[in-house]
Length: 554
Image (cartoon, rainbow, N blue to C red; front, side, top):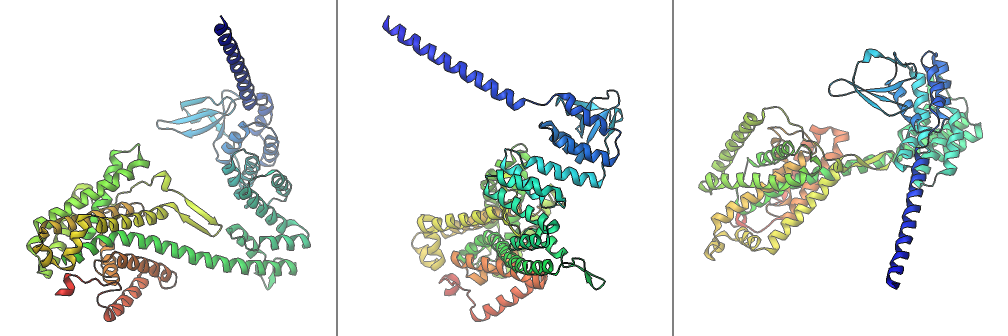
């Protein structure tokens, strides 16, 4: 009996707690969904139908003062030119959009969605450029009060384009209420820009001083505007403002130039990462087998096309397709490499010219095969969402995620390959053959099959390079040809068969290319790099990090 009373008390306690939770949830949901009466929204919207543009501007302001989440939908519809009203019902307003089989209409009051509607039954609420500017600023002001930080950041960035003096007050109010440091910084810049336009002389100079070091394009455009000269006179009459603007702009331009250099280095490292993936396999095969493989670029192409095929087979899982494409490209290109070595190259060892011509012919065959199967047109490979966008460091420097992931991925591949060569029996045998083929053969190492597996490994890594390249450019039959010469330059410059040399060579060539391109152009930059490599090879014919291998013995 005592146990029954204890369990009864627990049951009553749980029931009471669940009741309170249910009531609280209902009250929260009710508050979040609470909206003003429809009539309060309909009154200004009904006037929009026949009002002139100046009156519409006032109505937009009136709508923005209504605390209702439906206002955002209405104003966004107006800004996009998609807000319509029904000709049959005077109180029905809709946001129209195109669907698969016709137009869709969303009721702005009830959120009800109508499909396959006739656009002729609706009349558009027209807007002009001045009204669009007001709508953009009004939406930004409303979004500054959003609970979502990203929404507030976007709104603060939009405020930088504002030239309306009336936005100074709401910006200062938002600054006082804002808790996020990143949003607060953007709001402070927007407020300083408006004060620099419309404040008193002393306030403008102080505001320009606060903008010193801000790298946003809008800030640079504002400061440059103060220094415009026309017909022998400055448009900005205040000399103190001009002086402050010139000083701030000079400091900003120095920072922009520095950040541009950092961006070029980043692009150079990303190019070096691609060259590393493309050249490391070539370095291994050349170092172990002494084979100049002119079909190496086509192994890269096969990897890229494998990525394209995987995405066609997984159209609803693009975010995961690359995770499947990497091993698939390695296997496809590696298998083709083994077939080439067993079918052609093993019969031509010791005859480098014939090997070069044979692999060049194989490259042409592979290109034509791809043209026959996939057409000669370039194919587009989608970028997964997690590789899209960029990491914004400041207003003048942003690092794209796709290049960042490729840099990390190439380093992972290099590390995995180094572990394979140093920690496995296959790697030990490969190093033995590289140092002394005849001695390795006499010790029982099957050098023929090791050559095949080495060629397959190098081709497989080239296929992985094709996966990376598919995220930077379109996939086409000539994709590999664009990187085969650069790959050979990396191998020769870094040292045949040396992973460290390949890494240093790839990064050196990538950074040198990108640093010279702004001054010399892409073509001349490549020519200059080639000249430097030729001069370097004249002095160091075995590259920066030479190995003692079969080539040295001969």
